[in-house]
Length: 289
Image (tube, rainbow, N blue to C red):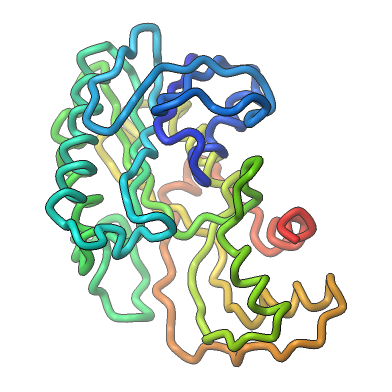
C-alpha cells in the first residue's frame, strides 16, 4: 500500500512516515519543499503541497493529513491575530485535500484531529467518541468542522477516519526540538515551573494506531473518529524522571491538583491497539534528554 502524508516534516507527521518506512512501504511526503537530505531514515518521494492545494494523488492508496497552519509553537491559540485566515487556511484547505483524495480514488484518508474537539466538558469527564463535541477554542472548532466535512464524503471506496489524538511526545526530527525541550531547559536552570497534568501519547504509538486503522475493515472505522491517548502525566512525575537521569537537584513543581479528562480509547483497543504506557515513556527519555 502506498502512503502519502501531508505535514510530513512536522513533529507529529514524521512518526507516520517513519512507521511506514520501517515496514518497507513507499511513502510520498506532501510538503512545500522537499525534506532535507537525511531527515528521514530512508528515501521518500516528494510532491509539492500547500494547504488549499488539490495535489496529484495518483497511485496513492492512503493519505494521512497532518498539515496545519498555525502560529509557531501553538495549536490552541494558533490563530494569532488572524482568526479568519486561520479558519480559511485550515478548514478550506483540509476540505480541498479531502475532495482531491476521494476524486483520485484514495481508499483510506486519516485526518489528524484532536482531543480539543471535546472542549467544554468539565475536568474529570471521561471522553468518549459518542459524546457531542463542544469545542471551546477556534482550534477545536476547526478540527471538528473538518471532521464533519470529511465524514460527509464517506462512501463506497472511500473510508475516512479522524484520529482524535491527545498531546504527542517523542524524539523530534533532525534539527528540531521535541515538545518538552523548553520545559527540560527551564527545569535544569531552576526556573519556576507551573504545575500541570495532561494526557499524552507517544508518536510511535500514534503511528501504530494509524496502521491498525488503515488495515481494519472499512465498515469498522469508516466515517468515525477514534480517540488516541495513553498516559495521564503530571509534570512533577516527568521531571522527577529527568532529575533521576541527570542527577539534578532543582526543585520539582508541585503535583497538579486539578482533575484531568481522560480519553476512553476502547474503540481503538478493540482493533488491537496497545500503547506503551509508562514503560514507553521511560525507555524514550534518554533520547529526549
